[in-house]
Image 1 (tube, rainbow, N blue to C red):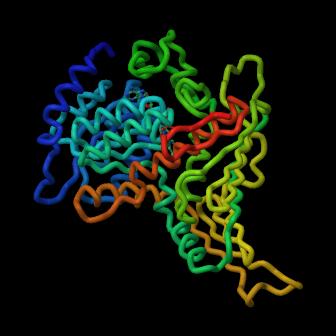
Image 2 (cartoon, rainbow, N blue to C red):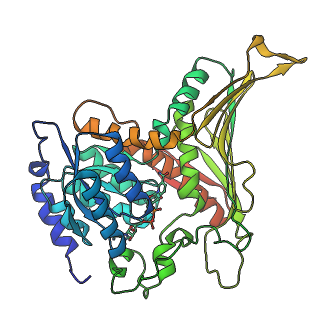
Image 3 (cartoon, protein in one colour):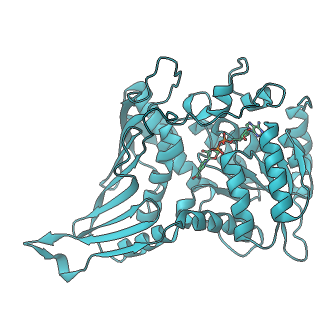
Length: 419
Ligand SMILES: NC(=O)c1ccc[n+]([C@@H]2O[C@H](COP(=O)([O-])OP(=O)(O)OC[C@H]3O[C@@H](n4cnc5c(N)ncnc54)[C@H](O)[C@@H]3O)[C@@H](O)[C@H]2O)c1
């Protein structure tokens, strides 16, 4: 892959025509889409885009690994019945005036530049979580977004999961009483002798000839081609915040959604690499982590994540003085009343709702929400401000863990203060 691009000239050119460039909806209200990054998530999001919407067309796809580029092109041909433009240069997708909306599902460190460039090009955006790799980058996106007319949905799809909507309604109607405490957790494990956590399979043919390493690095520190860093980027600080920004942000975000909160005041965190310690494993991000948040209104969030036992799975437990609402594995909602002297409070009954596979529907609904917002039919459920709130809590945890100090969020200066 040898085509070069000048980012500066691209941004200059796009800024000039950004407002005029925003393509009008066709008479059929069809939304034309570009996909930037078609690995595990970008491929899945494209499938969910088709599954959840009739009126969409993928016009252009971009990936810097030729294997994934071919795969997404094939999928669009099968599902959309058209042949999309395919490129390793995302600015080509952004320069396509017919593309109205882009899905950004590249590694975390690339979200910032791609989102800013997409805003400058007048595209509506679905950007995967976390919004950006640092708080400062997220703030830059926030500013650019506020000055632009484009719609930006952040990929915290739990907000579109009906079970969390139900939990929000039940709790706001008072079913658990006062809630000052949430316990959230995500536990994973791998078979003995199996692939270590986040060591995803590297394609057999992966090589510099079919993998555009410079474009993968983007603004990250320069270094030589490294397959592990490219295909297992979650394990390295240059490209990822690890547990904090990959997993935790979903759970702080949904706690904010269910309880109507925004950013925490403080965070302490600790953990390390305790499970995956093979001498040949050069991972940098922890596999074991706890973070504790205090919010201004007498609210405490206790988070834990461990990659060496998955007995408790994934979930959030909203603990009130009259009962508990839990959402487990994104597919089960359980209400348990508090019992006093053996009697359930106010004679409330235990209740369970099980919706297997509900996360797929949530992702479809989340993308559809953006498509409908672009068509002028809906308000965004996870706009960029909300995505930045979730990202801030994730970055606070990373800063607390790496500096071994409490981190405070200063809402006035919009900065994280360490120590
Ligand atoms: N919301 C969720 O539940 C959820 C789940 C999984 C992943 N994600 C997010 O999705 C994003 C992607 O994660 P993933 O698991 O798909 O990773 P991945 O490694 O499977 O895919 C990333 C893709 O981006 C491509 N890429 C790298 N640099 C590029 C560039 N400069 N231009 C174009 N393409 C480039 C890679 O070749 C790869 O195909 C991350 O932000 C991740 O946090 C979200």
